[in-house]
Image 1: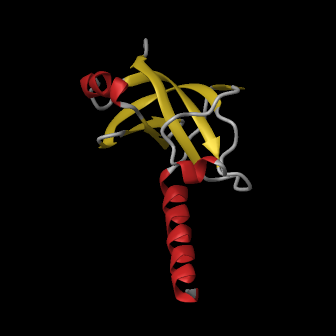
Image 2: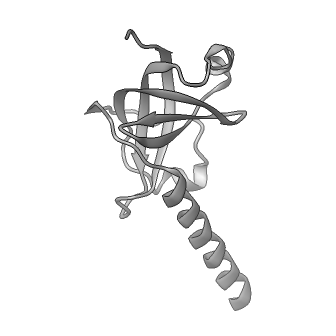
Length: 127
């Protein structure tokens, strides 16, 4: 049992390290919202802060996987999860396009670095 718990801790630390490496970015504006973002694992939901809605402008870099996009904001890559509802819209965007987007961000309680971001809307930005 002790070995299993140690393996679980090692896995959790590895996942946290990967998230620290992948997630970054900076928002243009933010304000607090009193709602929870659907789609996060129930096991993690109790350990997350309240969702904060943010708006930003950046360069669309493409899809990292079928439900994640990467956008460069202030020179830093930001990975955002998106729902099926945005899938068709995201697929129409070309890499290198300047985009304006709205998303929510939650932090792991007690950790000022690890963040979970959920894309709410995205459109081509005016030049």
